[in-house]
Length: 241
Image (tube, rainbow, N blue to C red; front, side):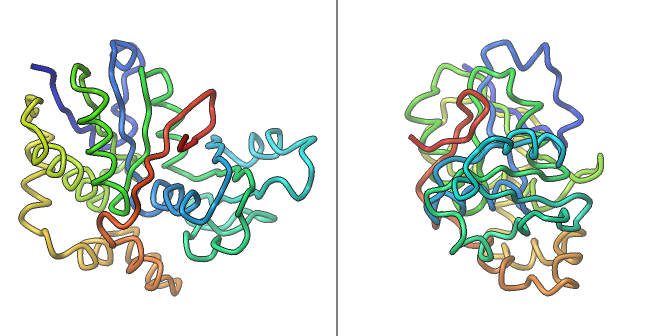
């Protein structure tokens, strides 16, 4: 029976272990993976996750000006010259375009996971769809849910998102042997099933976003199962096809 494991922060990623036929699902609920999910819902062509603003500018170099958007933050502050990576604010600016996304934690976690057999991104918005995708296509794989964390620290909202994913997956099939971290994530979610908004707003990152006036964005991100698409990493780009 394959295993299902949850890493509590991206710093726990082990490159050597990731290459052993692992399928990874990355969570950065506030905000990167929620933003990525919403980007495709709003009609983005693809999302390129980069490590920092310098890499973003290199990726954008030479592209037609109307073909891409630079989106990013560093330590919670929008990068100068970039769009703010909040899902609702991007709605009218990214349709048909390549989104070059730089974030402090989420895009770094995606890139650190890239050595795995397959990498998906998920959030509360598409956690149910991600579970369905894993159940349909990866029954033989070890599954690793990676919580991005923030600044080297564990984030409560990521564990909640991972727990939602684990609960959805195990409702579909009992194919996987859950590690203690996966069991803990599921228990945390099931103990707070109807409390998504409260969990997100009470988290450290959530409180920072609330102070900056982003309550509407958090309310949107708290919508479990709203979106059916599951972005996956192909040749360094996140796509849904």
